[in-house]
Length: 457
Image 1 (cartoon, rainbow, N blue to C red):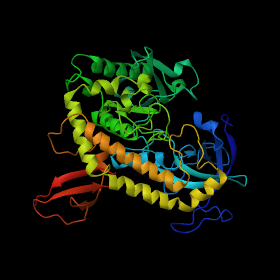
Image 2: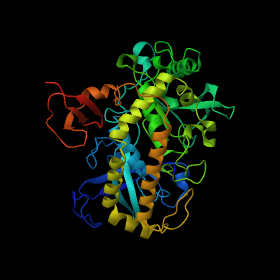
Image 3: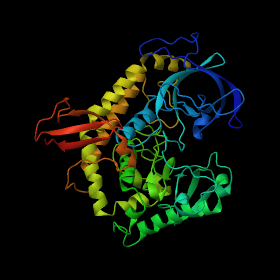
Image 4: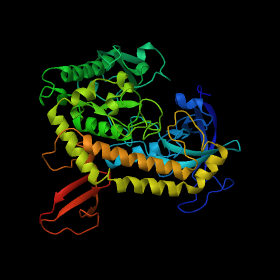
């Protein structure tokens, strides 16, 4: 059911890289109790259902475990790609986000069987929550009611109200959405509204109000008192780039998360993590979602968008930073060859499983809301994705605002960057090298970030 969760058994079979997993093999990766329910909004209307689950002990307590190499936790999701016939739009987007230096839900492909009934290809993934290995911000406790302890950590969102309990689960912004004339509604995500004290609700609402007031003011571009005082600007830039690259028809107005850590930890309003891109990359027949041209932030679907991103684009300095970030990413993470390699490798991994999936769900060559392109084979669906991305990259190259007057590459200034490790150094052609004096190289780190440097002895 959608609610409440039911208590049952789950087993996971994983025999290692390159080894076939058979349904009758021992449950060697997990063999224990879970509670499980349907999740999602419009996705619940499809016959292939998405699930939320919690790994538990026999007595119902949380069971924090590492599954398929993911960090220990107890809250998980089984995402069910259905309308996305490549099965990879979310996985691709989350991979891009990680390579750009941000936390996104880690993913593992699997095939799901429920009570002997084969359900097809699913994506086992992390639920978005505060955790040292997920959204790494301070825990906000009941006694954190004043001083620095009151200032973090909060996770909020702009989203549908599916799953939101009551009217007190959100607050009205002081500012209208882009064209509807209605006030933007901002929801409490974590802690939930019922777990927040009045002082805590008042704090995060006031902080967002201050950000919006500064952004709407005549001095909005002033780096000391404008929007930059309250926001992690790099996160807004990267969030914009990814949503525009994907041309996600739900961008900005739905599934848009933000978080804020304590002030003592540099806590500013930060966009992310990324979520829900199954209707992106050309996979929609409304809101011009199929077109590789135009900015999603200003399409007809943008009527419900916050005013934030359109206003930011009025700042020349922001435009120039955006241009530099785009130029840097196009040389690395968003180079067409890099994106296509990930897509091709993922399609290769899924080659056998996707055939079983489409034997179960015979939808290739058939319209499934809201498909624009309808391929007759899995290979055609993957090729459309690549062709669409190529066209989108070219359009954005030719229409990106701003001018880059500095080295066209920067990384997130998140505190997480201080924990990164250098993986390798490559030259401008991507060949691994031992750099020589005055040689320009690309330094690649384990968190996905990259830097272009001139090597000096």
